[in-house]
Image (cartoon, one colour):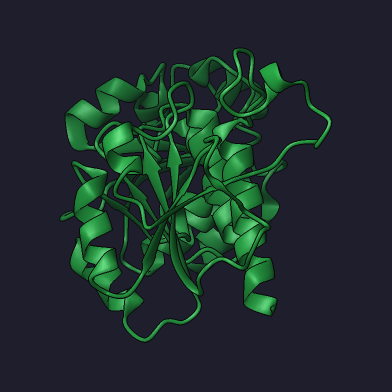
Length: 284
């Protein structure tokens, strides 16, 4: 079940040769997975039936545990040297393993999110409204996995969690954290609110409640807005409550919320802080 590629020109390596992500998505809805740890987590998701594995290449010396698993599972894969893999991929971030996967068909439906909400208390859902940075998306998935979030909802303006940079930064948690896509965040807001979930916007607004002022509701959906513009006004106005992450008390007025030069947190960092506060609220 193993092909050995010793030369850069070996046809067995063609699926990985100078691959552009937009070509993968357009051709088959595919995506690229890099590094042994992320590939291992991807294989877990494949085994559970959530994704399909199309191709995989491994540098045995850099990923012996991955090779052992592939052989145990009787999966076909290509072996090559580190220099050959670097040459065909064009970069060194692969860390010894690359795979091409296929997306779930059909994509997970919101009905699955509603099912997860039933009887879950506490419950923390992260809702992303216009998050475009791959770094932020990847770090948010990693934070949700580490800090006890239950699911992520992304609106139609968000970046793709299955882009290779997001996958790498998430450490493969994109394959573990349940996530759902909606065209408009208001669709998910309405569905969650009808299931007794409190919608909480995380925004650096002047009149927002300090996030540590009182415990977050035990069943909460926390909205994280766009990196540059925050949560849109029409969305913010329909939140059940708005919380802000407070800065130092001695900030000059211009640097406080609403000031001309206000300080604010990166979206991924703000999400991690909000998740940690939700976790603290569960303990109270």
